Length: 389
Ligand code: SAH
Image 1: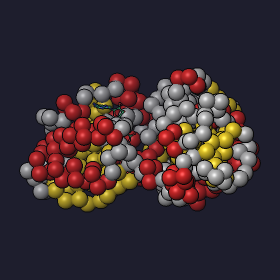
Image 2: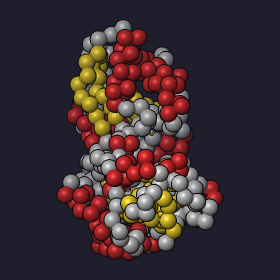
Image 3: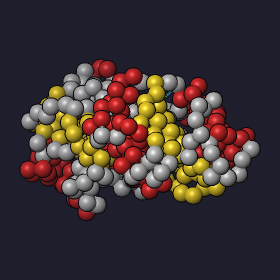
Image 4: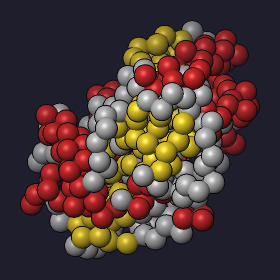
């Protein structure tokens, strides 16, 4: 097995069980190591520290284990069983809901691996070449852990791997026609992992969509950055009077329209294809509730300042125009904007808009997107429910 040795000043981080080794921490030669190889990590005195997947990138090793164990079928079986057991305890697969994230990377001690579950189909998304090389082992472990619940496994990593890995998207077990209908709190959703964004749906907003439902009865709602309409559907199911869903992508709006029709909510719904930043400058209606769920404005630290300006502008438009007493559900999924910075940005937007704002609820990612306590970078989704006086 290939070895890497790390600088004595970097040992601490691994001893605290942080799962990444950065390229700058490695003091040994790595030219002979191939992308995706399993490597053993040693300190400068040749003491065993960890084992993980190597990649020629800024994050050079994603650590899979801090014990001296093989990375084989038994390893994946145990980790995936553990991940599935957590979701079972959380009762995430039931009569009313059958969409959840089964494996959330570092949060399930499987860095580089995402597995989402949609009513019988597991969609695997690899973020490292090592995980991609292990998809057959992962598929076998999923079959063992899920048994007859599992009808198909689709591997979709071409978007998330570096080009040199030549990731192919294909079924590894069974097949399932898309779009495939799955349920979230009783709402029907058509999921298309082949043509849709990411694995087909943004599962991470499930509990926040449910919460919106509780505020929505009798209300007029604007759902911006709606993708396939998740927030709109929960609001309509819980008795919203009227919902407008907005996205800049025509494909996303087509998904929203199909989902609205599938649930027979058409009479209370309108879709809008537009750029949300432009549209929010001058709203055509008085809304009781506005949802702002933009894509990550900053993917890197260098983009953070610009991203904050974007969040501030977007939120100031909503705060300025919402009805008195209105509610805003506002989110950021930029990992580099933490919850304190996000809250301060919203406060700045309220000052700019010149209205009194109260924070009613502080929102975050759900339990099937767990944060490994030794990997704080895993916290990415944050949101606030605001009331504007
Ligand atoms: N709220 C959604 C997920 C949002 S994902 C849910 O619950 O499922 C972000 C969405 O923003 C994507 O659908 C993307 O097409 C859309 N988007 C990106 N930039 C946009 C812009 N400038 N204006 C409007 N929509 C935009």
